[in-house]
Image 1 (cartoon, rainbow, N blue to C red):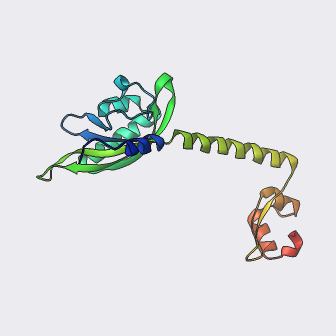
Image 2 (cartoon, one colour; image 1 turned 30 degrees about the vertical axis):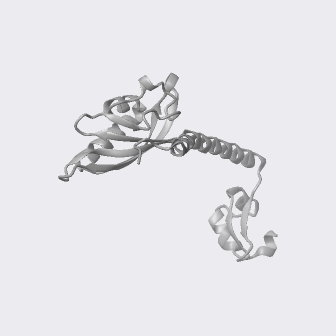
Image 3 (spheres, rainbow, N blue to C red; image 1 turned 180 degrees about the vertical axis):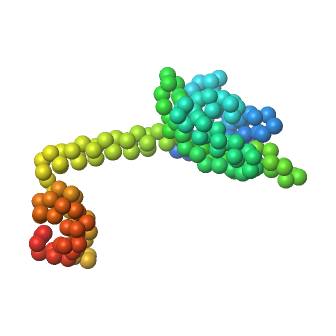
Length: 190
């Protein structure tokens, strides 16, 4: 069996934005599998981080101490880790990465490093941020317009959630009290 990954595996890693790596405790170096993680960082090959120090240098300053602590604890405890952070990419762009690793031991049981993955979550985090912004705008528009809305459980035929505006419209200050008062009084709402 070849040590080279199949073209299908390479394509799967690229499409899912996952990079596989090995970190050596003795050399503090990172080895990539395949050698060049296409598209993960958007960096030319010669700018890829090749050591734990180079990775830390590219982690967003607000995340760096937290991630360094995770690295130290994993090394001291001879264990893997899972951490998410912002990575500074090309032109100071921000990438959101999830790093997961498992410890590796030699034949005598000595911890020699970690084998792990980086998963580029940037598109997911950006979509989540856009959704949060959209929800804020919708909430503001609903509040300004004085609209109220609710969720009705058709199976149990009862009110299960309502907005603060809906509660105010029906003369009750607290949405939880509105739910308790209306309970299954569907005819009042429907």
